[in-house]
Length: 407
Image 1 (cartoon, one colour):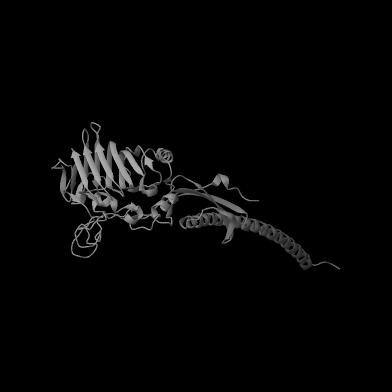
Image 2 (tube, rainbow, N blue to C red):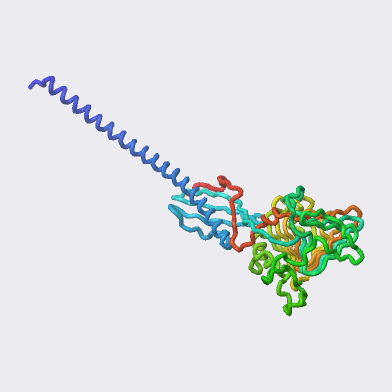
């Protein structure tokens, strides 16, 4: 039987269709293999991005722990979202921590490092004088000069901005000799006009300027255990000051100490304090509460440069026997000490100084200049003392070299 052309064409078409089916099937296999590989790569890329976010979540979690007074370390790792993180917490210097967080998602690992710093809020100190004392104040200017200026100055001490407060406020007496000058409430500092007995009765407050007992008179009593106004009551309108540095600022007892411990600025020896000061460049840094709990600090070094932000220095020992001696340098903020004795170097303090005991200011060396300048601005921006931290990120980077892909 003869084959027709139609049969020939049908066979050719069948062969072609079969071949095409084979080719398409092969392409499909290749397509699905390529698509699968691309999907896997995309999945890994997404996992890598997610691992970075998980690592950042580790930093946030660690900061939250630090602010609650807990350590920043998170070990073993904890689950988070689609992965897990772990955090290493190491010391970064006073008030600073170094946090290194590792995030892992689907076999991808990313690491980040953040340096965080405790930055407390601010609080205000209300004092009736630029210099205040629970007991007496003695001022002597001989070869050098001593100036206690209660007029209000700006935060650098360069400009007068208001009348201010009393130059000196005390629960006892003020003695002034030589060239020592006291000013306040808008009056420029001047030498004690009567030096026979040294008792200074001008620009002095022997109280806190408040009517504490509501009888219409302020400071009619001194904090001395006597009935000064003859009304049959003793010290009912206390004109003295709290014998506790915390209470002076309206804080719970030990608040300043605990805040300094948290900031890494609590010291129990002069050597520890001076080593820290050296590490800070030789100057007291700003925004710190420094607590010195030992008896004698001599000499008392503050550093040659003024700190940018106000700080608080507390010097205290058992029975209020701590003595801060031979001060030198520049400081902005509030000094709270048991007792202060002798300024024999060039000194400038902008803000205020308070002692629970006595204060003796003298400048006996020729050319020595001692300036204590009251400043409302400084006293309204003191670092806040609180048990909870306020850590903030000051630098961030990814540790790419230490973040290999986990097989």
